[in-house]
Amino acid sequence: MAGFLELYGLSKEYMTRSGPQVAVEDFNLDIRKGEFVCLIGHSGCGKSTVLSMVAGLNSISSGGIVIDGKEIDGPGPDRGMVFQSPSLLPWLTARDNVMLAVDQVYPHASPEERSQIVEYYLSVVGLADSMEKRPGELSGGMRQRVGIARAFSLAPKVLLLDEPFGMLDSLTRLELHDVLLGLWQRDRRTALMVTHDVDEALFLSDRVVMMTSGPRARVGDILEVDFARPRKRADVLGHPDYYTLRERLIGFLADEDRERLAS
Image (cartoon, rainbow, N blue to C red; front, side, top):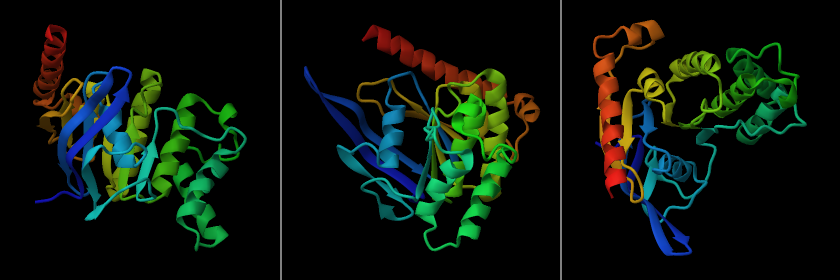
């Protein structure tokens, strides 16, 4: 059965000084509607390359991507993106940064309706009292909350997250995991997230897709994560399967490391 988000035979080739180099080759993955999937693998294995192709920000060398039965050929509002760096316009307030996206996606809504959407999502991520602040007045975690609010405000069919917590301290990262899951739980947007953090992947996802080391990276293995939702961190850490699943992920990455060093 085909997924809501389908990646079939996906490949990406770059031209280098020494000739063509295949970063990702024959990458195949079906993601169900409302599923949260994490991509994990060593740095440089092609995780972000796959995500950027799904976002339409990077051209596809071969294969294809289908969202809700329609093949994509570029960026679109059906995908909301959260980057590692929030990429906010520094001269605009948090409200105005989110409003830029909302104005594009809801051109026929009234100004009042658009304001309600912006205020709702900024409030849900905990920025009700900081909407009029500019990025320079916000902490790194607060700026990322703006980025999350902006992505969800688009009501995208697919949510894409590229290591969104990688630049944050441990405490802020844990807080934002809860913010993200709380928002996601409301309407179960189909989500694909890149991470290098095993514990983050296990806490957030329904499945963890392990990528082989590049070049010519592809799907190496897929781990089902059956922890009940909504999730509490203490329950996940105390689950009898948690450390078994964790060891499987770490073991895969260790095997890939050995193969990479041996080649």
